[in-house]
Amino acid sequence: MTIITTSDATSSEDGEKRNTSSDRFRRIIAFPLRQPMLAASCGLLFAFSVLALASPWITGDPAALDPLGRLKAPSADQPFGTDQVGRSVLDRALWGTRVSLSVGISVAMVTTMIGVAIGVVAGYFRAIDTIAMRAMDAVMAIPAILLAIALVALIGASPFVIVTAIAVPEIPRMARVVRASVLTLRERAYVEAAITCGGRTTTILRRHILPGAAGPIMVQTTYVFASAMILESILSFLGAGTPPDVPSWGNMMSEGRQFLQIAPWILGFPALMLAATVLAANLMGDALRDMLDPSLQGGELR
Image 1 (cartoon, rainbow, N blue to C red):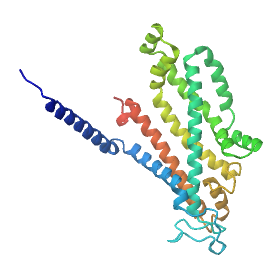
Image 2 (cartoon, helix red, strand yellow):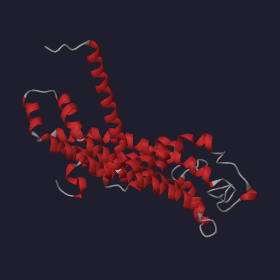
Image 3 (tube, rainbow, N blue to C red):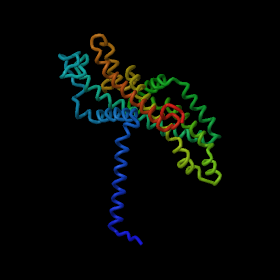
Image 4 (tube, one colour):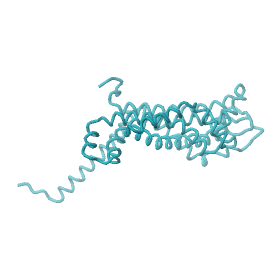
């Protein structure tokens, strides 16, 4: 008979912990190799987030004027050059990162919470489906830009109004995506079995419906995040978004269009930063879709 001592059991547990830790470390190291697009997009968005959070400490005053140094081309002292009144384009662009990311994150959160609630209710309770979806169709019939401009013109420009104006047109799109997923999950055998066994509606939604729809929700959230930043820049470019005294990418592009021929860097650098952020968000959505949908992995059906 084999006798297992306490020291042997302890060493065995320590070995299992080391193996588990090493396996987890290998998975972390191998992640960029297995999902290069997702890793690159996450890294780029993380870099922009760090710049947005650290901009008050790594940049100067974005409103500081230097009339003698106006319209200076990019140089070692001013990597992004200066604008028409001598303000640093780099400082203003980094401050604009805070505006765009905060609006994008806020709109994505609001849209996800409200859109998921409407989509789940409409997809699971068929009696409410028609009414809810017709209301969403009515909202989608209004152009997003015109609705946002109308709300800002009626109420005034403020962070709350801007987030609301951008989120309202995005909610129906999220609701329709979630509803489509819920309608498919509603017919699954395990959901029907849970209903037949008398499971509570809240329990079924929490344990079976929402986890199954998590993939499409995550993907759509990234697209809403990117769309919100574009809409915020459009509103600021048209003068209906962020106030002119607050640096934002839209404001900077609006001011830079007047000096496009002699100082293209005023418009170019904010436009490049906006394009890079939106591209990273869209690539993240595509990578999440490919990762969460096995039929799309490797670019072929499996």
